[in-house]
Image (cartoon, rainbow, N blue to C red):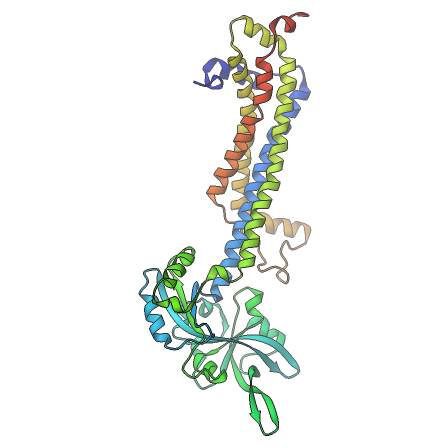
Length: 418
């Protein structure tokens, strides 16, 4: 059994921890070390929970408009889309699939002009691959009728153009018409029949949804589409499903999964989480160095006690175990307090943040700048175990040198002036 876990060493180490010392400065540093570890652990758990929540929230809003998986032709044209839909549905991970047409364009209303991503859909099939039908503020997807040239706009796009349901906007496409007067842009009038809001400015301010048949006529695709979108049972299995489809009959097509959309954003969040973890870990490291200082001063203060214990038969390992118990207890108590504080704060951010905002009169997240307007939190127990494990390890490692120094105390020199 290791020395620090034997009953005698544990009892003496615990007594030293609880005893009222003559040197109150040592007690103060011990308390500071404990609170430093607690603060560091609390900050780490809370910040990582917020970053997890932010990533989850933004990912969910992206996936409201971006499908889990897309299959398209190499020239942005896919013929025989119904066969592709059937092949996709044969995969056990695929829930549903639907065709789409997508291209860039512009919308004009009066003197207002705005660049737009135009997406053609089949209203009956779209709910199977996206959540836009649940995000409608006015109108419904089923209001889009083939041949009627109707459009559904994002809420912010409608505000930019200053249009409402019932107004007519002019859609300009990249293709051109050749007329006796020369080359003219291709224009078409669309009636606004609905407005959606997904809570992500990128889509709310730039996306226009029309019927797929109207989109094919507008962009002269004939019987082709841009591609087919699919929804999976497990969105995190998308890279594996993409690989499997590329090895199948669909290998001749361009297969992409949701992680490739906004890949830079997801990669940046991952790097930020890693760097913030390392930076906040320094708080725990500083507190651990305080434990070293505390134990070094304690060893100096207790040299006579150590010498007496050695005279009574205590081995160097026993002396080392006594001081390792004391330092480890400081680390364990600090870690436990930090874990409790971090979990409590992470689970109650929806109460704490509004209270702070009302108290000081400011917004933590400005919806005009950030993707979301509320501070989310998603507590991952893996993060809690990792943080508490690292904190405990720091506490144990910080006791090694002072404990080793205590075990090297010479009895004769320590008792010379006693």
